[in-house]
Every structure is written in structure tokens, then in C-alpha cells.
Image (cartoon, rainbow, N blue to C red; front, side, top):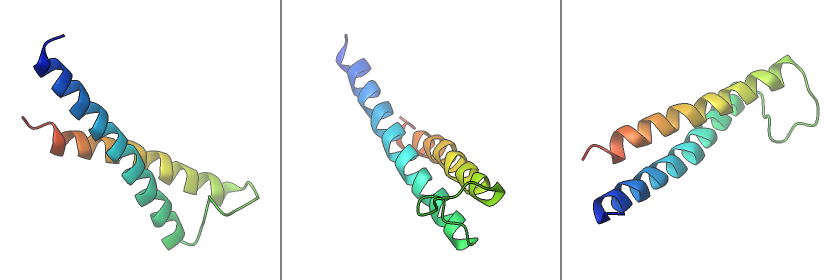
Length: 73
């Protein structure tokens, strides 16, 4: 494996990790700001599922943004 391929693969992995974690935290905080804390709740209802969707959407958006920022070269 050429060194440039390894470097790109490491940058992609780093971008994915930062994007997923950062996006999930942003989605969770958005849910808390809206009044629904998915992580601390023990019940399942429509509001909790909506908060979970915010976390999952945050993962995707964070990954997309991190790849755009870290993989420009």
C-alpha cells in the first residue's frame, strides 16, 4: 500500500470518528435544548424517538462536515 493511500485512509478514519462523535453530541444537545433528553430518559415515546432521530441525523451531518473540512487535499 503506497504511503499516500495510507495517509488518506488515516485522514478518512479520523474525519469519520470526529464527525460521528461531534455530530452525535450536537444532536443530543439540540434535543436537550428542545426539552427532550434521550440519554437520561427511561421511557419510550414519540418525543424520545424524535430525540434519537436528532442524534442519528447529527452523526450523519457531522461525518459529512468533517470529511468536507479534513479531506480537502
